[in-house]
Image 1 (cartoon, rainbow, N blue to C red):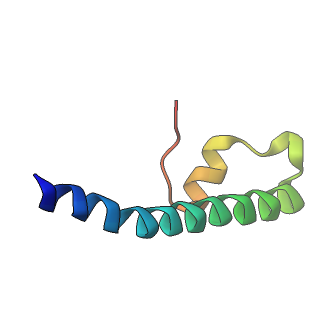
Image 2: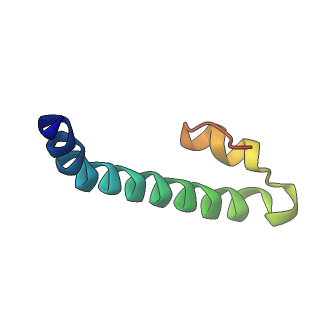
Length: 57
């Protein structure tokens, strides 16, 4: 049990870094699509597809 808790603690920084990378990718993709298509013609689905991530609920 203690070993599992240690592994969870060790994975938190890696998970946080991955989350930040994904967030940055989504934001950069959104900005690019806004510039190309316009804000009113850019959908969340298009941003997710271009960024290679799934759409949340």
